[in-house]
Image (cartoon, rainbow, N blue to C red; front, side, top):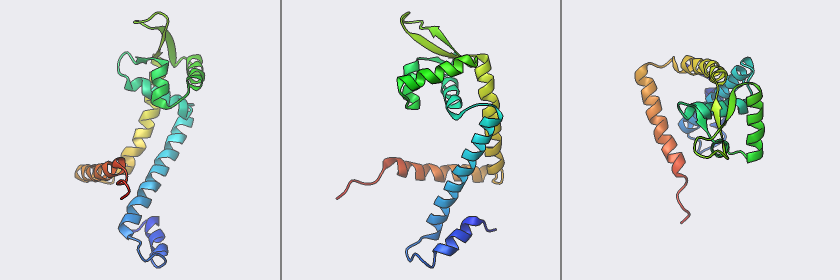
Length: 168
């Protein structure tokens, strides 16, 4: 079975003496898969009338666990946003009824951000559609193959996260 990456490798192999077709194939296929999943995510967010920045904020709040509440500064830090950008995002989400500002339980001078039922429902619908495509794509593999792929990608990710060795 061939795919478009095989054609890509066939074009470059005669031109690059040191091209490793397995490395080129793996990297190019990972890039294509990430691009495909990003495109699908964008389509699903549009279908659910969510912007990426809105979804990411809701995602962070869900990740906090019950009661899906945290501080604006923690959200800003997790999402690598300035306080002003975070305020604008929270204003928009609050207008849509997806979050609410609550006085902090530990300091009445501060505010916490809490996910509403409407916000959790919007996130749940969008993540479900995104997950469907992930399952569809990886569904061509059986459970043993999916585990093997995950394990192999973990090893590659660990190497990437370590970074290059220091210069000699």
